[in-house]
Length: 214
Image (cartoon, rainbow, N blue to C red; front, top):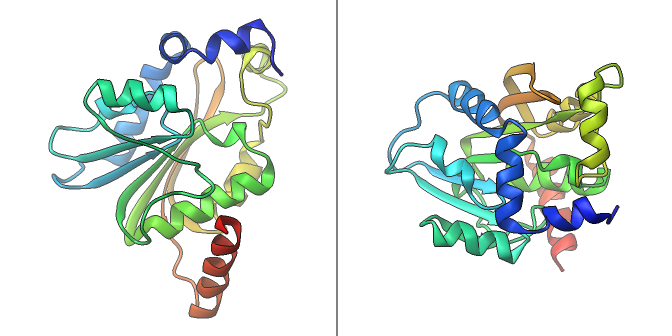
């Protein structure tokens, strides 16, 4: 879709205003509560982080980095003082096992199934063995009228049910906590740790990632 609303939301500054109006502060507070205390020096990657507004939920002294494919949004994040890089969530320009927390906030509904899976695999790759994934996205719930209206104007074209999102996440992560809540959309919020896979499976995943990056 590329109507006038979607063209307006391509503006980085307006995008941020719309996010706040749509209830992002409520979601941010719930994400902060779910993850709990974050130790100083923790390396946090906000993958698909837009303009980096999520930095506000983490205390100072944390090593927060916003990564987004949209250079205009990366520049906004950088201008407000965040570490920010341009990058694709399906091919993260991040070293393996180098991140303590990966945040995927409202990203998956922008991706086709193959890319959603790739993003989850990449998140597991860049996380340290004891790292954590913090995931949030809107749920496709046909019975929820406000959500149906929101999907009509949302930039994302690939909404999914709670069961589908959970199934993809659980291919790579043990979900320690999972909650749902409603603002205008209904949302899935989950906290997980990387699954410990046999070496042969991990090697196959690494080969697949390398092939995508080549």
